[in-house]
Length: 159
Image (cartoon, rainbow, N blue to C red):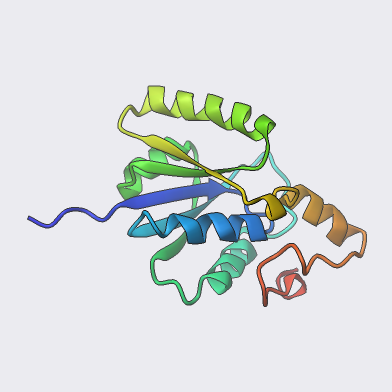
C-alpha cells in the first residue's frame, strides 16, 4: 500500500511574499512531498495586494517547483489542514517575540486538532529583519524593495 504524500501547509497573508517566506518554503521541501502556501483571508483586514495578485506573485516565485502549490482559505488553519490532508503547519521564526506568539497559536491548534503538528523554522540571520509590514511601508513611501523580495519579482506588476 502506497503511503500518502507528506503535506506541509505554510499559512499566512503574504502581503507581499518576502525572501524570508521564499527561504522557508524552499527549505521545507527537504522534508515535505508537497508544500501548500496557503493565503488566509480575513474580511476585517485591509490588504495592500489583492488575493488574486498575491496568488500570482507566489506562483511566479515557485513556477519551477512542482511540489509547491498556492491556495487560499478562510476560517481556521486547522480546518484547512484537515481539508487538504495535511498533518503539519510550517511557521517561520525571526525573533523571540515570534516564538511566543507562534507557540501559543501552535498549542491552541494542537488542542483543537491533536494530530496536527506545528514545525518552526528559524529564519536565517540575514533575512531576520525582513517582514511584509516593513516592505509595504517602503513601497508606500516610494522606496526600493528589490533586495527584500524574491529575485525577478516586480511588485509593480501586481498593483
